[in-house]
Structure formats: C-alpha cells, structure tokens
Length: 215
Image (cartoon, rainbow, N blue to C red; front, side, top):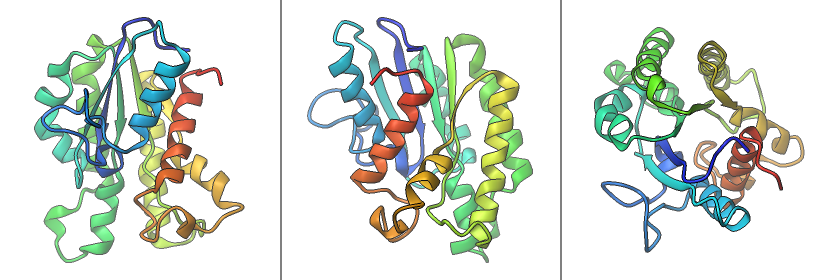
C-alpha cells in the first residue's frame, strides 16, 4: 500500500465526500468523519493496518465546485499539512449547467475547471508525499445522455491532470459503470449523483484498490 505509518490523509471535495462530516474539520469522535466513503476507507485502513495509525480527515463541503475549493484551499488543504491529499471535485461544475441552465454565473466551463484545478495542484504538490485525483461521476449508463457526455469530458480532464502530475487516479465513473452493467442506477440513488451506502462502498473499494490496499 502507498500509505506509510503515521501518514495524514486528507480528502477534499463536494457533498459526495462531505456527507455530514463535522465542522470545521471532519475527524475525531462521534461520527465526525461523516457518512461517506471517507469513513469506510478510514475504518478499513484502521481495522486491517492497526499499527499504521493513518490519520484520515474529511474536508468535503456540499455544493462545492472547483472554484469553491479555490476559496478555501489555504485553510482546508494547505493549512492542514497533509502527507496525502485526495481531491474529488467536478460534479457540481457540470450539474449546475443542467439543473440551473439560466444561472450561468454558477457554471464552470471545462477551460476554467482545468485551469483552476491545475493551480490548486501546483500550489500544494511540492509539500505532499502523494496526490490522489478522483474523477467526477454521473450514475447514467447511457453514454449519449447530454449530462453524461459532459461529465465524461470533465473526467477526462482529471485523468489528464493525474497523468501530467504523477497523481494516483481513482476512476469513480468506471467503478460505477462496472456496477451498472448488472444494476439500475436507482439501486444507488434516484438523483444519479448522491450514492447510498452501497454506492459509497463502491467508491471506497475503488479508492483502496488505487492505493494498493490488500484485501
């Protein structure tokens, strides 16, 4: 596994990461880590590597785009001094183009998404042991659906950045696509975005596989 003893692993992103994590920092007692895949990852790492003492922190914030990450980057990423940083962003950057088509001030174009994401990576990469980038997802098996086409476009940007900066890639869309070969998206959630426990297990499994976790 890529993580080493006493590493600090910070997750940052939108509601998929957030899921009721504590404020201002999502870690500690009484469910502070939240109910997302982050908690599943933390639990499995602690249970299977009890002597590793990997510190996991959840800094997801519901509704965030990459521009929102930029606004809180100093406090919620750089200021936490992670050894490893996992970024899961892009869903709202796309979604607002479809559920709020007339509110163009909320839209994040592919060009702005890539440029901003690149700035964030370059500002923190020198201080990290490792970076993990997670593609955005849409629980829609029809790849000709307009929003699925757009989400895949942003996913390709994340893949390009991961390759360029030597980051670990977690292809969450592929993980869901594998599951959706045998199941309808509503098994995970009706809005095709926010996963239930089953969906978060899929995300945790994909994440752990990418970092070399031994089941």
